Length: 267
Image 1 (cartoon, rainbow, N blue to C red):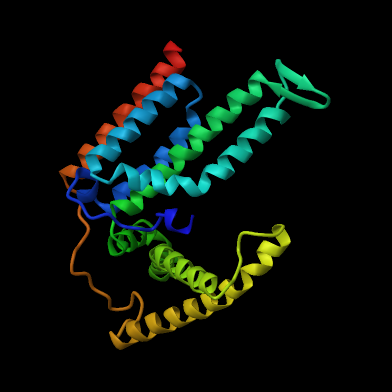
Image 2 (image 1 turned 90 degrees about the vertical axis):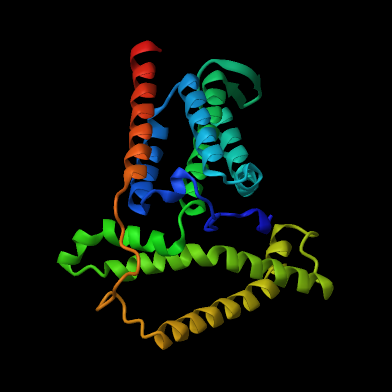
């Protein structure tokens, strides 16, 4: 399960998304997330799914890699869907005592599952096609106006990017600790929920120690390279909008306008 979490990982490539400016990708990601909640028809979800699939294919990110990243959230999606099925009122499909399944509940559960999966894929594509350094520069540029009110924009962007970058590292470390403890006789699968939670204490303590050690090593490395935050900092690569950004934005805008028109005018 731990190895299935892929968020924060970068997949090298030379696609249109890889070449686009990180600011463009960040803005389009947030716009797409809002757009997903505006869709309320299955035709709209079908078109959005096809658009997402086309985005994945053109980005050259392996489909197995993306599907692997969806595994950890399947339980949450299924659990939330079941809750919706039996708690939303409406036309009853079947009834057993106080348990009632309705058509409206099933409809809401399916739509919510589609939304969650599309949200996760859309957010993941941002990190799959953007390097941590480019992501930091993009966030810092977008939050630039906040510098006027003395908000530490560079430090915030750096912390967000470091957090994303270290997710795969900490997950890999967790997997190694679990295997090491299992080889010493630790049992993580038997017992009730309380016993299973207690069995993870030998994993959490080494993980926290490792995380603090890595943080200290990172701070030392940054200081050794004379890192002093945004003060006097220059960039080897300057962010500039190119034709790839206009193409990506235009395709996304035309698609969203078309789907919304079909939803509110046709269907």
